[in-house]
Image (cartoon, rainbow, N blue to C red; front, side, top):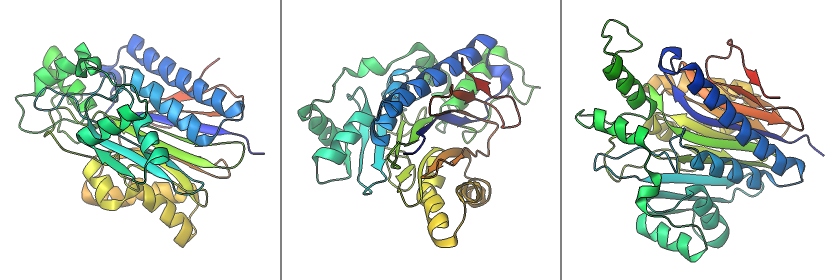
Length: 338
């Protein structure tokens, strides 16, 4: 029997200590630790990796701190469009939904597509009708609203480009504090913050799974779909290699099939998990301006959490050990709960 492992991410980018108060920072650590503990409870009770990542991402979708589900960002039309995917490493079964507007937990809809249809990806109204038929909770679009995300959108809606989640938060911070001489507080380009959530897990039986979900990008073109619901780009899992969930400049992760590329480097080049993940994040993605990070886990319980940005909300838990959470660069202290 394997020692179960679960890891999650809540987005990556220029996460400055100056833009997070001590109270806000503590709130992120608390939320990450609580969600990891819930995933550990599933795994330690004998639940599958698929069940664990689904539950972890469902909780991330329900937490307004993260850009998924309740707390999703606004499109240029002032609406919400959500995407999610899930994949099982046992048999490469996968499901995904994109551009949904009334599904409370898109990851549950993705799971339903995987288990109850012959398809992998459903979009828009078709995905919503399918989810409703299979008992997935439907909500009014207003459910996804939070004041913080709406204020972000209000501040950036005049910009010509979309802003990737925390970019909008940083822009709002700059507008609020008005310090044009401070580079960290100045308005920054849209490729500095990425709002996606995800989870990877290894269960006691040696099986892997991954799930990814997002509310998209602030002020985005309606109908835009990023990497999160695309198998191989934002999510991938195979017991023979790894489970991977990504967060970053979606188009770059799509163009490189980044999550699958981690697995391919392990399968075809003999790279270790860490080697493969590092090559994708620090070599491949930057060649086309790709910024962000990923979480990856192999069947031996090895874990890699690389990111080429200033920070990435992340956490992991092994067996019965207390969750470990982190926000900033790896050399900075990680927080262990309990």
